[in-house]
Image (cartoon, rainbow, N blue to C red):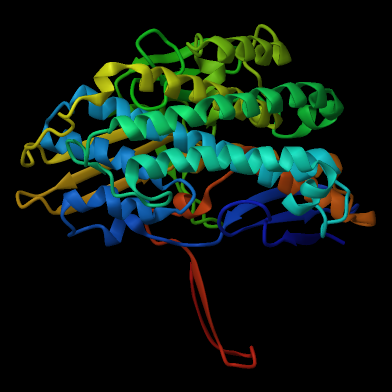
Length: 475
């Protein structure tokens, strides 16, 4: 008989989600869905607040990637002021954004995904975690902890805190860089680069073991969307939108970020509190695309730093002449981007102009609408604000990196489940592979919990013994 299998919670990701697999009479998977089960509602409770609060307030969306929201929100507020921030402020914002990339990618690769890669998909779940990695490969576990610490330390040196620094402000940043802080940050970078290169070399030797996973973990044709700079190179803080199709042909190029509503639409589904963005000209759901490190490396002409460009060339041999299509290779792409981020921070911190004391343009609000877009570790992040004459928020839309990947994640769990899950002889390792394709995308679900309209809701009231007393359902 047909039945439904629920994987709940999905483990080793940020936030709360479940996966449901619909099995047919033969025990094979007919359909699979990825459900975001938590609801946040930042767009609504920010209404009525002063826009100057938005960088610090929206950073509270998440404790994993608050820097991404801090900087993207500050960029939206820059537009509300109608100012161009001082060059030193932009360079320092870039440094913090790159440090965020290092710590987040390190967390994803070493802590969340390496247990599967090192210990195996079918290994004991009680051991399949960072503590198991410490036992299996202590040196790699230490490298992962140290690399993330380096990224977090740079964030703390700039912003005063590792998590939720109130540092980027409308018009620039809160304080200039001191020579002591600059020198302290620069001392960390060579060690970080050694760790990143060592991990990259290790992973290159490991990757041939996962040929089947590369074929089946979210491997299907989609478009890829990311920012690029004026030369078409890798970009994380500013730039223009580029979209390539599955064959590598450019569909949209050098699209100004304030024109994003022309190309990105948003749909909702009754089974998730996460929106489903799509490429408007192709419609929903045909307009499926992916964002994040895989998309950024597929889209850019080059990285623009020495070793990262070597690694990028090697990455592209995974699927020559076309974009790398397998979501399994998000892991590879993260390692390339960590190298790029460390090389780029060193280049920025060597620039004497970064020591300038002019770090903030001061103005009152001069527009009623502002859009900020940057690349978070997981992909394109959009903050879109509208304010009234008193500078109070009247409307907000957040399109989160993880949300952009929502269609691809749902298609990915279905592909993996149909390949590995056999309901007649169900094994834990089969279900772990279904979870693992989600971990390839490294979703940040607290950030992604945003939806329009009257979404379905199910509230249960239970007493101290856990018995159901009352419930409310909508939709």
